[in-house]
Amino acid sequence: MLPEEALKNYRKAGQIACNVRNEAHKLVEVGASVLDICEKLENMIRDKGGKPAFPINICINNVAAHYSPPPMEAKTIPVDAIVKVDIGVHINGYIADTATSVGLSVEHEDMIKTAEECLGRAIKTIRPGVKASEVGDAVEKVIKRYGFKPIWNLTGHQLARFMLHTGKSIPNVGKINGSKLDEGEVYAIEPFVTLPQAAGEVKSTNDAYIYRFQKERSVKDEKAKQLMKAIKTNFRNLPFSARWIINELPRGDFNQAFSKLLASKNVTGYPVLVEKSSSVVAQAEHTVIVTRDGCEVTTV
Image (cartoon, rainbow, N blue to C red):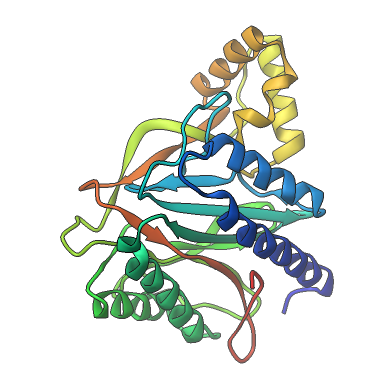
């Protein structure tokens, strides 16, 4: 089992994430600034005593994952959108990861309810010794029962201290990944649902607005070194936004230094992921700790 201090931190992070997720529903409305929503939610995390484990994701319609607004973004929430809000919180590196979908049209209601129901079904299957593929099978069966399609190449993921993705993954379809879950492991479970006629998979775009420290490599530029030090000190291996570090240097210097860190692969970006056939996507997510008799959900 996990040490008591780790459990305490996981639970506190989960409670903050739950509270912030509930507030997100109040902020997502037609015409709202995506940048304002992100910054309000990130500041809420900080005000409640946590730190963002990654930049708030606001993924609209066919965008499935990894979109967080860059500095000065003017994008707003469009009419009749389905909006995924993905929230990460950490306390001393112990992470809670949770997401919800907000539908601004009645046509999205059934897909959102399906995502939530299959998340609940997946959670009920989790126990020590269960295969990840069994969890995926439970998700897939619920999604197909309601006439929708899972996104087969997006998965849930194991969490560790200061590590958002590590070790094992939890598929959203059966027959993928026969690894077993063990007591004391922590997972983010996140079904993604799309329309029955869709491709049911995501593809990478050429855009990236979320970054992480990859590996320290030699750079000669002193301002790039200064920026690298700030990134390692503040975020370790966790994802971050350029919004969070843009004031480390004057704007012109920042752009040049950050470009050098990307070019040298000290820092890498997470490509924005979109549904391959441009279909809308719904998401639901909770973080769980595998216990002796099942699991504890930290984000409720």
